[in-house]
Image (cartoon, rainbow, N blue to C red; front, side):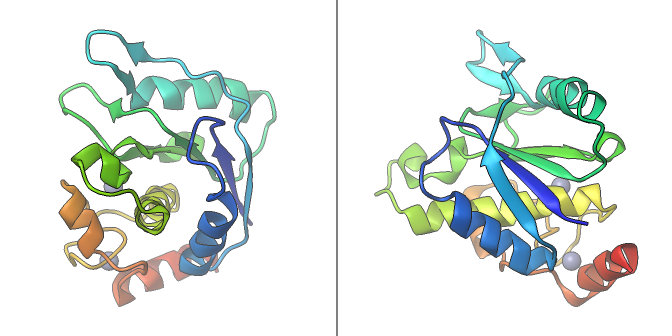
Length: 178
Ligand SMILES: [Zn+2]
Ligand SMILES: [Zn+2]
């Protein structure tokens, strides 16, 4: 078992390998990263955001059907995401197709008018990416605000989390992998 990360060419450059390494540490699984071949669908002109559900639909079409893999996949993309009914989402996962997507749009300090830091982007991306992959393994939201599986509503929520699962979520992940 390993995890495939697809990195959209417009996502922040140079962070791929450290992000893959940190994801691998949290999930205790090998993680590969490669450039994303996906053409992004689901852009909503009125909102200037992509519909995360449409993105997952296209991952299912392009990847899981054509390549026929059952490995968990995570797409990292730079554009802001929403789902109908919510102003935005940091990411979204769909267990049925074993695929998730994470946007870096709201993970950069620049989005909030603060000074840029690659370390901050990587930290947040790793937390958000591990969270979506956790869903692919059947983990649900956790009430521990420091756990990867806690659902962040704001950047502060995300920054408060540790780059780790709580003991309970760790045990549930291990049970799925064993
Ligand atoms: Zn979640
Ligand atoms: Zn937890």
